[in-house]
Length: 130
View (spheres, rainbow, N blue to C red):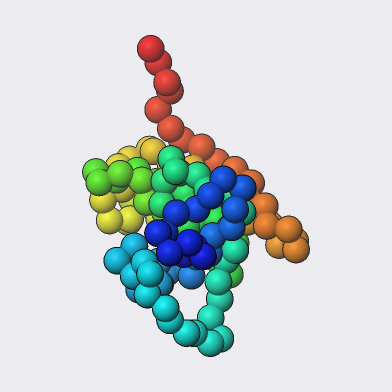
């Protein structure tokens, strides 16, 4: 969401996102006024046109200590993981993900500090051979 009635976000300006709210984040609602209470909203200072939705979503706040970014036949997806799921990622959990292709994933650990950080703990991607 943006303060601009045309839906644009100017360079070095702010925009807003209500995580997992398709009504408020839909461009079909541009120009419509609405009220809300007790809603979590992210204030974004920057706008990356080329970022995948899956990589953005895995960085949103979550109680899960891990997240896995994995490739499916339809593109990249992510899933929050508990610690035991992350430790059994290769042997059990990844094979149970609907549409997951064997081998293509990145495991992230979320920091527990006040500053949100994401550490890459495991990578299994095909090599970028020419």
